Image (cartoon, rainbow, N blue to C red; front, side, top):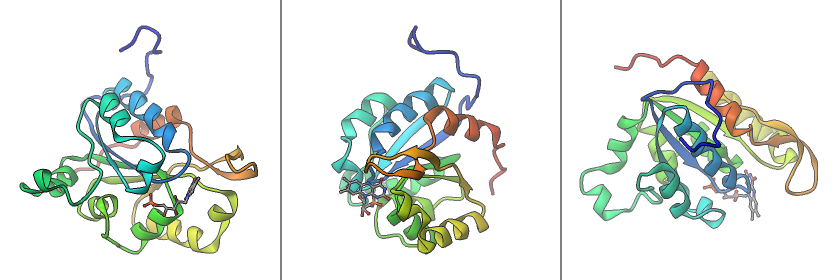
Length: 194
Ligand SMILES: Cc1cc2nc3c(=O)[nH]c(=O)nc-3n(C[C@H](O)[C@H](O)[C@H](O)COP(=O)(O)O)c2cc1C
């Protein structure tokens, strides 16, 4: 741990956290989240949607996680051994952060048309979603219904926070702070798995 990094109070020692990064402006905060997860003792692997890569490069997450980053379902080398299933099995916890309105909709409806949605569907790991979006996207009945569906299936909602947004508006829809995401994850006991 770097000398300037405060000792984390939350522990995720030895836990496997799969961080799924989606295409929202808060994707840059996911880089900090990788640091905080590792400070708490977690092993972190990162999967990105195609659109997430428009905001942050995979190299950033590779350097911070110390692991190769999956960016597509259609990776011939990784999929020779069904890598997405291996990754889905590996995860103790899946954290979708930032979770876009689009990916929340996919997850709520059981879509599996890209890497992140397929990983979430192919895993029985505890699912955490940390939405980040414009306040009106968040307040839209479609988004609210999708989140309620995910919660009814056992997913944990992290945030969103309230305040100033990148679009200049003020309201609900800010990504929960990385430290608070780690604290929430650590507070949730791991369920036993089949
Ligand atoms: C500059 C910019 C910022 C965006 N920020 C957000 C955001 O914060 N949250 C969100 O849900 N969508 C945001 N979007 C829209 C998503 O990128 C879009 O819905 C995309 O399809 C999401 O893809 P994904 O869920 O596969 O990552 C943004 C789009 C642009 C162009």
